Length: 318
Image 1 (cartoon, rainbow, N blue to C red):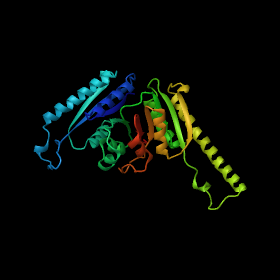
Image 2 (image 1 turned 135 degrees about the vertical axis):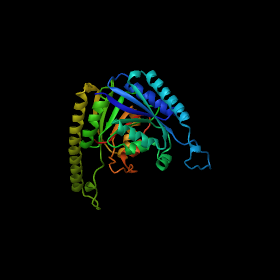
Image 3 (image 1 turned 60 degrees about the horizontal axis):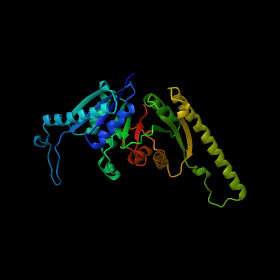
Image 4 (image 1 turned 180 degrees about the vertical axis):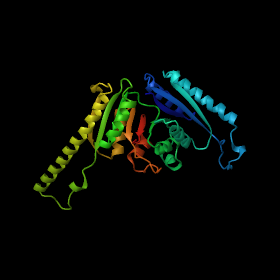
């Protein structure tokens, strides 16, 4: 079955680079179709200190919108073909008079039943993004039952994929997606990573100095907790490895790791991504069935705001 990806473009330099990166990643896969989607915003540019009601005088003429939009689509298609992606598997769609590109992107994906949305990140600072809500952040937050690829250019060209699993439930969600969308891509190397949480409070000091026998007993119980946790994690990691191997990926290109959390799950993930230069990172995000934004402290949000040099795939549960 053909897999369609809604590749959204904004006409920025980073957006065009993201198009080339996605095209290069998928160029040899016949099972993909890319839908290039561009929203031309309705209002003309405002200058500092200017205010304007939504009147005809503030609107860009439709003829100008179409001219600009078609130029962006044509350039994006040229870049895709230049990256090696076949022209006959590229569709284009232009949305004019857009007042909210993020909402239009979500409606397009939902209306066309497209499961994956890909966007380039324009590089806003973290504070500005949190205050104003960039298109990329809004799409990632509110894409219900869909996966969002966030392309932070330039991307590491290592052919390495990190699948970050917080637990067995993540393995049941992320592994099938990776198997369907990423395993068919040739020469990718997969790492399934699980970060153990810190030692729970039940093993903390009881408020008094432990004598040697108490310390020995406490340490033994901590080691038992760790070994049990690793044993459980290795079960779902091995299942994930087997599922990817079942798609034809050689086992020597699939690794599993269980690592202790040091500074926090999000921060440790960011360190792992940077140190090993993963080209693609797959992780889950909380479902937003009530249309609520990311919790500011969520792992997905922290990684989304700070990841660099990777294609971040945020997978929402079906």
